[in-house]
Image 1 (tube, each protein chain N blue to C red):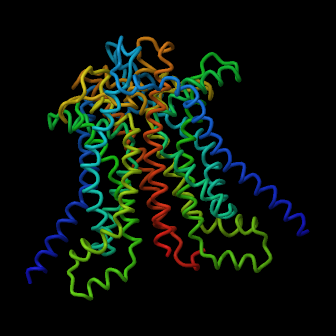
Image 2 (spheres, rainbow over the protein chains, first blue to last red):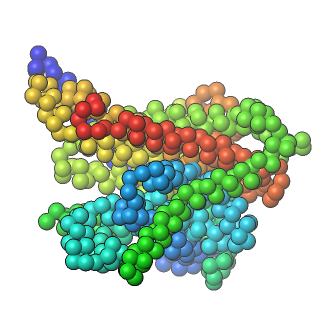
Image 3 (cartoon, rainbow over the protein chains, first blue to last red):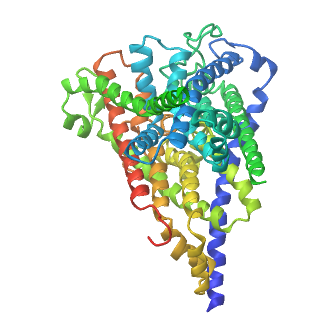
Length: 285
Length: 295
C-alpha cells in the first residue's frame, strides 16, 4: 500500500519536473533561434551606423541611442517618485484605509495594459502638454508604467533593513528623517538599485507604450534634445518585421536587432540577479 | 522644535509623492474617457460592444467590437489552459521539490522569461512558430489564435509561477509537519494540505497572469493574424482589442470617429484588466492565510 503511494508520488513528481524543464526549454528555443540567426548580422558597422536604403541595409545606431534616451527619461521620472513612495509606505504609513487605497492604486497601475499607457501618453503628454512625439513623452509614459515595479522593489529593500538599525538611530536622538536618510537608505541602497535595474530593463523592451508617443519609423539624425522624436530598438524590430520595404530580405537585420535588444535587456537583468544574490548572502551573515 | 517641523514637512512630502500613483491611474481613466466617450455620438453603447462588424474606415463606418472582444477572450482563455497548469506545476516544483541548488538555477530562468521583451516573442511567433504550425497542422496561415495563445502562455507563466511560488512558500511549516506525522507522503501533503492552504495566492497568481495576457499587445499584434471576425476554430486568425488599437492608431485621423473609437476600445480593455485586478486584490485580501487557524 505504502509502496503504491510512493510510486504515485514518484510519477507525479516527475511530471512537475517536466513542467519546470519545459519552461527552460521554451526559453532555450527562443534564444537559440534569435542568437543563431542574429549573430551574423552583428558587426561594428551594424552597431555604429544609421540605417540606409530605406532601412534595408546599414546599422541600428539611432535605435540604440533612442532606446537609451528613453530609458534615461524613464529613470529620471520613476526612480525618485518610486523610492519616495516606497519610503512613505514602509517608513511612515500606518496600516489603514489610506495605505490600502494607495496600494490598490499601485496594484492597478501595474495591471494597466501597455497599449493603454500608450493611449494615455498620446492624449496627455503628446497632445495636452504639447510635447509631441518625443523622447520626453515616451520616457514619461514608460516612467509611469515602471513606477509600480520600482515601488515594489524599493519596499522590499527597505523591509530587509533590520528594525534594530532604526531603533538604535532613534535612541541616539536622531529624528525620523535623519534615521531614514543616514541609516535606512544607505543599507537599502543596493536593493533599490537592483530593483530599479529590473524595472528599467522592462521599460527598454516595451514597444506598445512608445509606438505613438516617442518612437518613429525612421529619423536620419540622432536625437539632439529631449523633445526630439527617436528610433527605438523594439519598435524597429516591429517595423522591419511587419512594414519594412523588403520584409523577407531584411530578416537578418530583424534577427540582429532582436539579438541586440535581448543582450541589452538580459545583460541588465542578469547583473541585477547576480547583484541581488550577493546582497542576500551579505545580509545573512 | 525645528527638527519636528522638518520631520512633519518631510512626512507630508512623502505622502504627496506616494499619492502620485493614484493620481496617474486617475489621469489615465480621465483621458481614456475624454477621448473615448465622443464615439457615443455615433453609436450606442450596445451597438459598440455587441456590434458584429468592425469597419472603421468605411463610409458609413461600422464600430462594433464584439469580434475583437471575443478574440481577446478566446486568446486569453486558450493561453490560460496552457499557462495555468505549467505555471502552478513549476511553482510547486520550485517551492517543494527542487533542491536549493536546482531552484537557484530555475528561478533566474523564470525571471528571464518574464523579462523577455514582448516584441521579441511576437517576432519569434511570426517568423519561427507560424511556418511550423502551418506545416504541422497543414493549414493555410500560421498566424492565428493558437499561435498567439502559445506565445501569450510563455508570457503568463512567469507571473503565475512566481506569485504562486510565494504563496506556497509561505504555508506554515507546522501544517506540513502535521500532515507528515499523520503518515501522508510528500505528494499527498502537497495535494491535500499545501495547495488548499495556498489556494488564495494561487488564484491571485492566475488572475494576474490572465490579466497580463489579455492586455498584452505586441504578441497579438504580430502573431494573431489580425482578422476582425468571430473565431470558429483555434486555427482562425483573430484581432484582439490591444492589436486593434496598436494597428489602427497610426491611420486614425486625430479627433475623428475612428480615433475616439480606439480610445473607447482602450476603455473596454482597461475595464477588463481593472476588474481582474480588483478581483485579485479581493481574493488575496479576503482569503489571505492568517496564522494556521484559517485552513
